Length: 305
Image 1 (cartoon, helix red, strand yellow):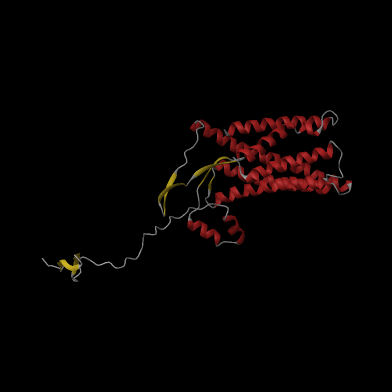
Image 2 (tube, one colour; image 1 turned 30 degrees about the horizontal axis):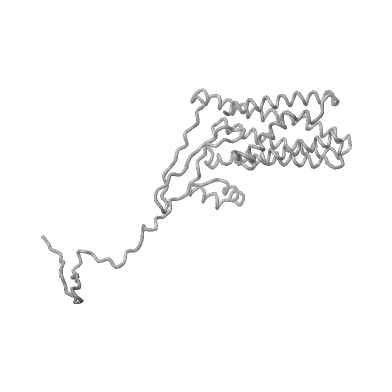
């Protein structure tokens, strides 16, 4: 499944690169809206998937919506020459927002591995570090390009030289991370045949009795594939909560194991209970025709043998 999705995405990106090359060679041969045709299809499918099927996270749907907005505004600005209505700084800000969300998700995954929530493989951890560096460099490149638009041409040339130097590193690091993840998924395909992994469940004591809940599991994370996760125990959760403030804030995004609920009948104080081994005599009475008569008079005492 991961290999098929990766192959389709790579093919769509390849078509987009070919159309973009044609656009850059001859701007009158093809419009920017036609260049975006493969990406239009991809974004619309994922947006509808997030709205209708709700099979992806809210942040993932937000990224696709922002990407659709970036393409729409750039088409309005370039193809229809409405530069006054759509400023370039607004488009740059949307692109930076997308990169910031992606960087935050990558840091979330890598940091989750450090505290024991995500169980990344060696290839996935290496890819996560490479992805994070690539996304941070991409933010710098986009910010430099956006700031250079309002500077003199002499300074623009120097800044564009920096972006030309950094841009290949961004693509190379992202591609190297994708290679590690794809190689790991391919080895898993050869080893297990691509079947879905079993998700174990555990028993938890609740007030109404025992209940089976999901403990460890496997999550589908974009650019990582199948990632195993394990809820934090209460000791680790408490240790993170008393750490630095930002660690305290981050720890709330990782789920923890729910402690077994205390049964209300356990530890309940017992009152008005008389031991059968007590020396106090006990008697039972009944009423016959309105009169009360004793029918049993039992005296219990300890006998030593």
